[in-house]
Length: 284
Image (cartoon, rainbow, N blue to C red; front, side):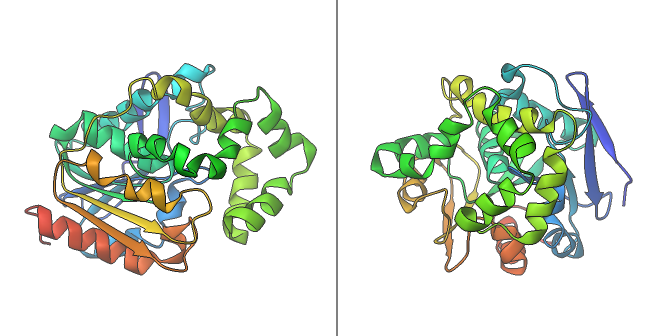
């Protein structure tokens, strides 16, 4: 292990898990909402056992030192900039990117805008932002109602913190099939000072990010979607290929909810490694 425990960008200090051989090819793993880097805890050992170094940051709003005030501090270009800063400070010229949920959106942004820094992209659950937008009139909007709720000032914070500390657990378990482990971690996160507003601001910043969504991705891409996902429709997944101008592989996990890496860590890691080996020189 290299011991890199933090990095800085934009005046903020981020926590980062750094596992695997320091001289191994690098995978940057990006979590979503309402998770942190620990979401990869069952996937990372399988990647490092194959010789890869995995950098998994607690992203903007999730690390205690990364909660600036103001919605515009959470746009996709800012979030992608954090990833590039991590790579730079780790001394990594080019890397593989892996993302889930909001981490998927950041992965699309990084691969689309900074494709010269990316070997391959492996994306879980959430398709390219433009594919997601395309699917809205085809039923996706009915599954994205909570994104509109999150635009209301102060209400989500009240919901998560001040109304009932079990609110997320009940809501998440019923609709999103959240595990007890994730529900508990979410309660801990959202009760940290400033965390509820900072993490919800990712959703509020969509009104700025969507004005200039990520360009097409031109690196080999693996997209994994699960048919039990309550938040992302098959229509959104099927709209994805036209935004990848490179080798593209689509896999469906049947009977799996939105939380792919938690429910199927072995299969997830195996597909990511297979994808990387097929489309790069990294055959470790």
